[in-house]
Length: 460
Image 1 (cartoon, rainbow, N blue to C red):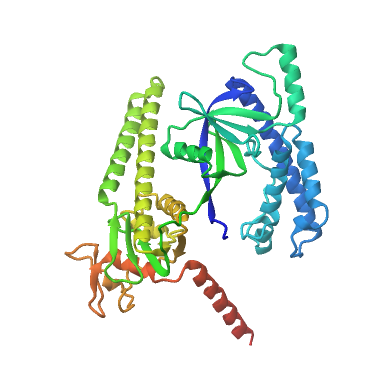
Image 2: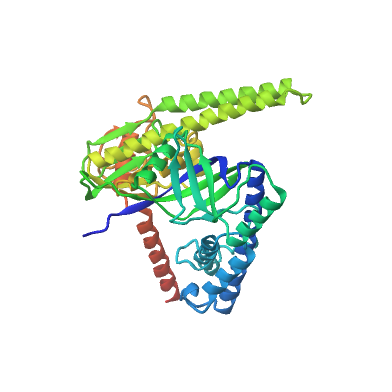
């Protein structure tokens, strides 16, 4: 029997209230501050051990974590510099640093140093993520009032003994004795996505993995990592069918397929840009009014609250629109049995972003991220394509010319090939080119091969 395919998803859970062993935010902040410092010191020491190992064996291709006693030394260092953290938490620190340093990915510190693209951090920040995980105590509990509590293993036996001694001697209010290293906090589940994820974890549909506690703008969040099964029931996907997505000039997304010249669709429209620009104008007007009426420094708080509310509405509107568009794109791919979605890789195309009506005003990277997240649920692959010339290339004959986009009386959406006379919507034509293009990973390999062959010819 084949194992069911899964993918990982990270959900951000906001800690709304401390529950156990303390109900005081002041006490919890003090505990977290101590643990952040321990994680920082342990991470710095583990990185130093990795630096020494790399200096001793810079040319070795073997995994340093499997050679000698490096893993044991890093774990011992993590335990020594983080005595209040639980055993798994310390082990997670040493393992994470080891993977970041000696991993096989392009982004590992070893590979960056060998390419001359970077170095390991000299020191970690004041508030690095605190790792948490324990199968026995890692769980959610639904309360009678509909809210949820989350329990996780956090501290060591040494912390437990010191904590219980202080509680007994000083009789601190809002604090309880610890029987084990488990903490419990209340979780904010006002977001539908968070509540749905938590409920599926309780039902056993999702499996929780190692996670982190992160501090952001004075609030504590749990970055919860879950394994989610891929939905394959009732879905038929063809490996030869590809869906191309063009981030259009007048539409957020225009899609087309590689196997048919007539199948295509646009999602969203200029109305979402107008709505976002409305929030932009409101924000500028409020800020201008604040500078005029608030010269003396009094009455600043109301203006700050108003601007924060507008920013919050703008952010929520953008997120909701991008989630809806991403869902429509993936459902369109499923309907047409496309196993792959290809999108433009717009990193570095600053000139295009400035001139493009949609891309200049919209968070295209967020849209791409949401498409990847949604596609993973159904086992659909998302690949990036070089966007160069996709908008001026004819999808019928392949002729490339800027004259193919006349932009006359018929507007910027019009495309007409000067060679074969093919006429179509410009975004639809670009989406077809994207669907039929090679993924960027393949083209990058070809470029490297061409560079090597040119160098060989020069040497000859």
